[in-house]
Length: 146
Image (cartoon, rainbow, N blue to C red):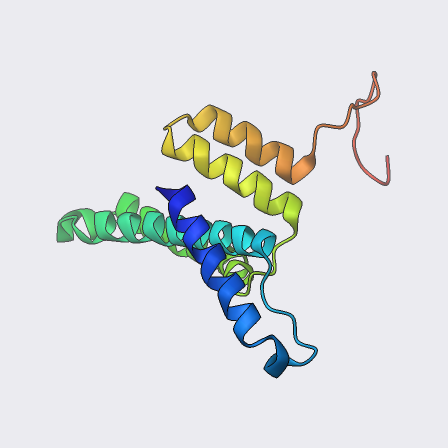
């Protein structure tokens, strides 16, 4: 189904570019490769928004006693912190301004999350965050002043 939608959108863009090509001047319209990136950005943004919304609904469905308990307050604080930490990523996704390597890693992470393979998602996140470069053997202290 996604291929059909992608093909339809590509056809619409090609028709739009040919009909308004002379009017556009020097401005370039989206290319099919950019359309795929745009779709990936919107899918990632939608999934992150959906996960945050489900989390918020779960927190709101608790009883007042659970909400006022220390554990409930910590859960809400974790949610609020996660939401604020994801804000720059969401902004970049909305603006379609994410580096390709980060977008590929996010797509991989989301795929693992949807499969409920959280260990693989964590591994993909660590590869995205710190890479998988080999450490020298015998390193005991990691720091600039050691």
